[in-house]
Length: 87
Image 1 (cartoon, helix red, strand yellow):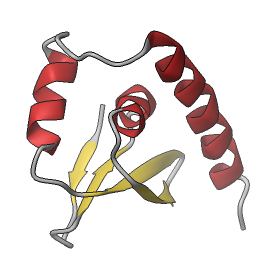
Image 2: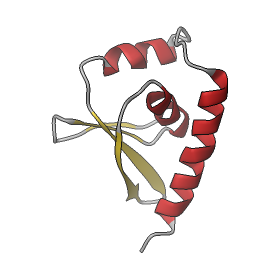
Image 3: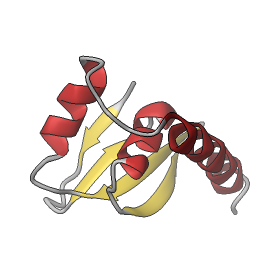
């Protein structure tokens, strides 16, 4: 997983598709996607509780709907494909 601390203090970036999907299901606002070489970076609006979400995700204590998570993974994969194919 690659996570980027943005120079802008109001952004949080990650290239981890599954973590990005979790953040979306948890309610964070996706503001953009960007190409970074062969990777796609997901840009979220930074919140005060993003550290808590990150801790819950990696400690396997996160509570989100499994079906919503799976649906969001599909959506983010489609978004990744579209971003990679943009000029």
